[in-house]
Length: 127
Image 1 (cartoon, rainbow, N blue to C red):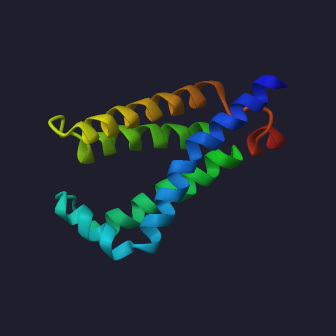
Image 2 (image 1 turned 30 degrees about the vertical axis):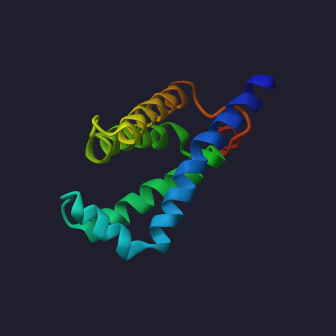
């Protein structure tokens, strides 16, 4: 039982940043789209909508432990992609730290994908 509680806490900690970031982008949609455009991302408005869905819905799914394995793979890929797109300036120490943080979160999601959400999850209740 202790292992399941630890996995739940891990899911909570992994999900917090995505839920808050997704909600923040949702409430500042125009500004986020403008920022994405400044990064040279294609179709910034559509990109913003996709990122909001991935972060907000993905974060909530990880929190609940619903569809955990596929969502964890998506978020791991998202973390690596966003590290490469938005945090690849190693001359800037803050960006370098954010790059490494994204890689660390990707690693956490890969572990979650491999071992599952634990017994305290929607996935376990559905099984």
